[in-house]
View 1 (cartoon, rainbow, N blue to C red):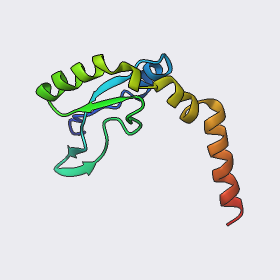
View 2 (view 1 turned 120 degrees about the horizontal axis):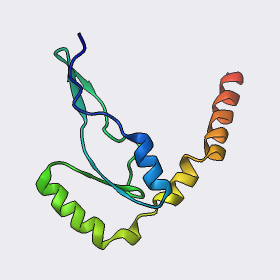
View 3 (view 1 turned 90 degrees about the vertical axis):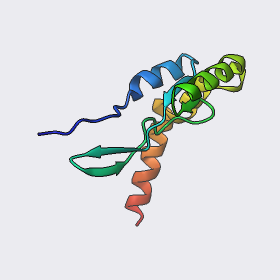
Length: 104
């Protein structure tokens, strides 16, 4: 029987929001318990100051939401996606990785 997972990545939806230049607010989770074992993880491994903010609980959400609303110009999620998630950026990273593997 599989254990209950308390955090499920919504990475594709977040990437779509970022590509539309919409920064996100995401609940921060850094671990998960499955069958009595604690596993370290991230609820949003690609979230950074350019594409959004983490919040810890409802009170923190309210504060971060106010900040998010008033400082939307500080975020540049579309530029971040183009630099880090575009086909070109990923192909370059893959090529570099393959090249370094072949040369080792």
